[in-house]
Amino acid sequence: MEQKEFIKKIIPAFSQEYVERLLLLYPEAYKENPEAFPLANLKGLDIYLVKTDQRILTSNFFVILNLGTGIIHDVWELPNSYYSDFKHFSESHDFISFVLNKEFGIKNIYLVSNFVDNYLIGAWGDTSVEEYIDTQKEWLGYMAREKLLTDARKFIGHINLPSSYYAKDAFKYAYSDLDFEPIIKMVNDSDFEYAINESLAAYDHSLYLAATATAGTAMETLIKRILELENSPVSENETTELGELTGRLRKTEVINRRDKRRIMLAADFRNLASHANKGRVIRQDTKLIYQEIFNLALNYFEK
Image (tube, rainbow, N blue to C red; front, side, top):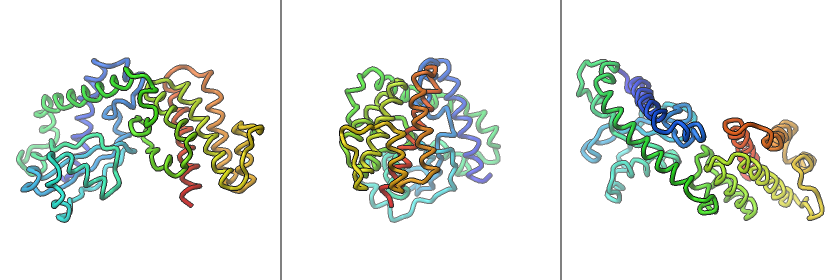
């Protein structure tokens, strides 16, 4: 069987074992913040299969899951030029993470494992994938439980600390699948960074109303920063209401009509958040505003 086809079957089986244990052990935590348990939603994970030199890494194949959009990539063979860096790492997993970051810019790596190696090198002969999965069900369940416990400890570690404990650098730890670090560097504004970090810290603590409100503040601050760079600064006695600020952006031709509609839609979600039910609705509202902040910053600062 083609290696990629094997991955398409084994990873969902692994995910299923994870979900079964998740619903037994942490149903409330999963309901409150599903992003804390990535393996439960394969649409939020990209999958890489990396072929390596067994003489160096003791395995021929590693599977890597990272936060993404559900893409299963073609098999990638690790170039020989990278192996000279292996001596700087004590673990193969850390080395693989380093290589993927350097080669593809991947930062949000969730799992690196060689558990697919035996089947892919032919150690199971003509055994079908289905038979293999059935035979390895107990082992898959054990690995799923260990990963679940690790994810749960990370989540509990977040919520047991006040937001202010790590809000200053929340963008480094948050569950959002958007990487805000380059955006923060591009904007280069302390008020914007503060608002983003406060919002992400609240988001990670499942405080979605607070996260949505501060995300809206971050959006306002971003627009003010752009207007300042366009020589149209907002004075202290002028309104900072998103509708007015967005109108000024449109007049300076920084955004087009479609961009304006999208920003105003995000503003509407922010305003309506206080009337929404707790949970998924407000979580999605916050993520929509994050996406618009991300888009606006990239479109302007990457010109």
